[in-house]
Image (cartoon, rainbow over all chains, first blue to last red; front, side, top):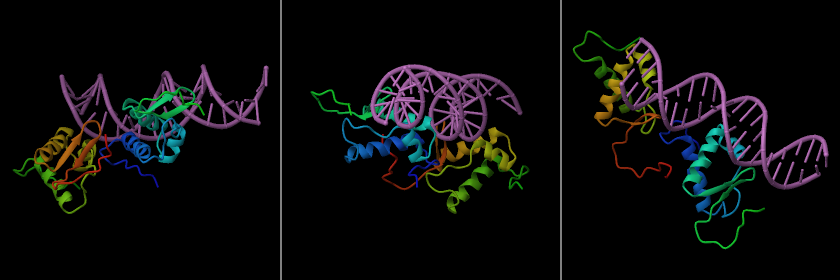
Amino acid sequence: MSEIDHESPTPVYRQIAALIVAEIENGALEVNRKIPSESALTQRFGVARETARNAVKHLREEGWVFTVPQRGTYVADRKPSNESAADE
Amino acid sequence: MSEIDHESPTPVYRQIAALIVAEIENGALEVNRKIPSESALTQRFGVARETARNAVKHLREEGWVFTVPQRGTYVADRKPSNESAADE
DNA sequence: TTATATTTGTCCGTATGTATG
DNA sequence: ACATACATACGGACAAATATA
């Protein structure tokens, strides 16, 4: 029951990115919390890993998340913060 | 089984365009859905690719479809709509 | 130390579809 | 009808760092 429409003019990776943004905005994904891993997104949306990576890359470029190599990708805080965070 | 008449005074690309318009109007091709690719039209109507491209171009100019670079050509919506679009 | 699992990083190749010459 | 280029999407593979056992 993927929410992904492969026939849409909107690229699949953009659709996934939009869904994640929605979860960030509605609070399902909190600041400094990990978002689902690439392989998790791959399974959840039934897409190739490259597509999941592309979605995350897009979110990164738009400032929604930041990625820590070999650790994961976390929801970015747009507001000033005094703590490092991103540990778990 | 091509519905194309090469002897007709109507250019082949216009005939193809008309057939696609008919499919849009009878609902076979829905709004925001992809229309057949250029190569698909090429095979289906047994014409050169340039001819297929020309048909699509004609449809675009008449507002029946819109093309998203590197993605495909889609049936346009003539009515005002607050498209979900999947954000930005 | 070793082993395993997870996660991101980085390559390879293939296919489709459009854009252009 | 040909070739090239680019964006998107899929599939696979291996490496490196991290975490746990």
